[in-house]
Length: 99
Image 1 (cartoon, one colour):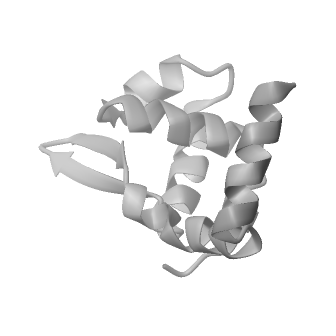
Image 2 (image 1 turned 180 degrees about the vertical axis):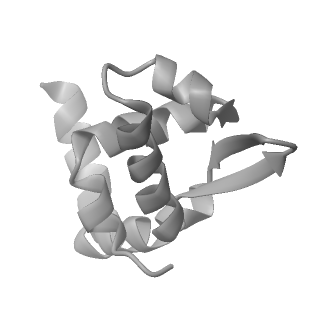
């Protein structure tokens, strides 16, 4: 993983792309059709997500298929978990449900 996941996920479009790729594997063309930007812009976002290890690419002939890599978010999860010790997380969840 060469790129910091936090920097990559700071961009809302990349977060949207990642959310889309969690649902199912998709081709670059299918992904591009869902966004109001050029295919080239989507391709650049996909490359950044690939470099960060957040998605994987599978080639099938001339098509490229993309899918989210849940394990790519392990560093992000570990960072957030470290900020919230177990008893604190339960208390926060309880407080959130009450409001």
